[in-house]
Image (tube, rainbow, N blue to C red; front, side, top):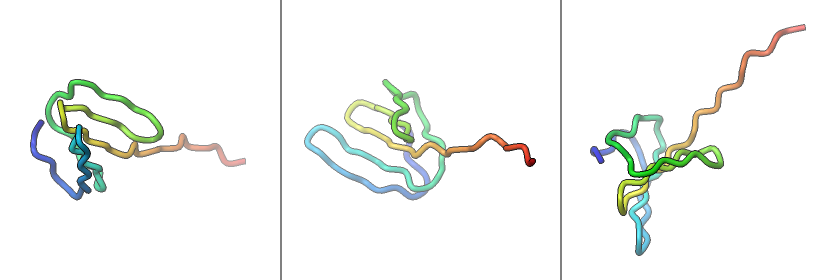
Length: 64
C-alpha cells in the first residue's frame, strides 16, 4: 500500500488499522480484496483497511 494523501481518520482494533478517507483521493497500490457496500468502498491490504465513501452521482433528469 502506498502512503495515503489527503485527510483521513485512523481507528485501531486488535486485528486492523482502519483509515477512513475524508477527502476524495485515489487509493494507491493493489488491494488483496475490494468490497463496495453501504455507500463505501473497502480496500484490504493485509492488516490495513482503507474505507472510502462512494461519490454518488444522480443521472440527469429530464425537465417537463
